Image 1 (cartoon, rainbow, N blue to C red):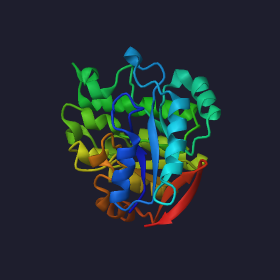
Image 2 (cartoon, rainbow, N blue to C red):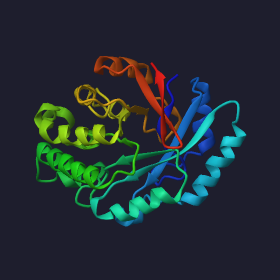
Image 3 (cartoon, helix red, strand yellow):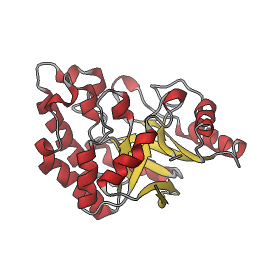
Length: 264
């Protein structure tokens, strides 16, 4: 079973699930390794998504010992990128011995698309374009992540979701993002949360995965974006097909921020 490298627990504002339940579900699915990636979104509106990282790290370390021989548990974080916070973000990731850092963009003009307010009075296409442009700006400025998380996250929450969305519509911007990842040797995440949210495809769209490979991308990580046990490894039975169709023969698993390539 492919390892889940994007999962949340009681340390994330949007989850109340004990780590132990996530770990037990992974074992039941036959996983040998997981990586917790709880949210850290600096300056999130209302003060949410502030991770108590020392406490979180201590819990991961305890569980690593508890589950030794049954499940390898790694220490990661999903860092919400904002271009004006680059220095703080760089200092943060240097402060802790993370195995894996996901760089994700959740806020556009200080609003999370999850709340859908940013779509009021605007077309989905307009918001999507701004989101990709801001993602590009973040990727240009911040390089402290191992993989770029759910690249087209914004499409999950559009009024019409994918009706006004395709890779080709935003290819110029998305290609710039992907080229930076390739140049830096960074990864792209295949996040099955898009399937869970009814898009009919993972984040990013398979056309983007394929384009990443065409541009020389080699590192793809896989995560379900699970906040509850039943979503650990969600739709992972489809992952191999997505990856193979895009031209990948391996998935990447990080330890000590270094990739290990696992044949699929």
